[in-house]
Length: 64
Image 1 (spheres, helix red, strand yellow):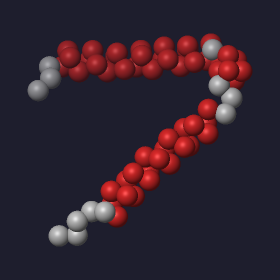
Image 2 (cartoon, rainbow, N blue to C red):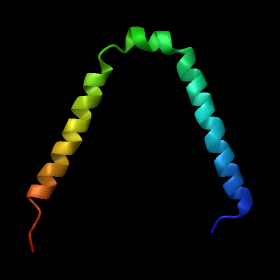
Image 3 (tube, rainbow, N blue to C red):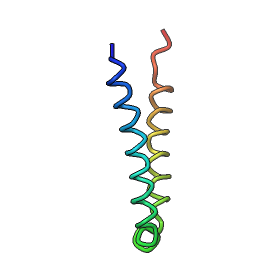
């Protein structure tokens, strides 16, 4: 399906991308703490909403 060169490229791309994202996040950590206080509550609310959708889907599922 994929050649070995494509797999090597994908793997190296993922590793370099993750390293770059960690570097950039660490560099801006002070700004994140200053401007994004309380953003965890938004994440918790979003995940709760998604969980509620799955519960509603499971409860309204046709048993047959």
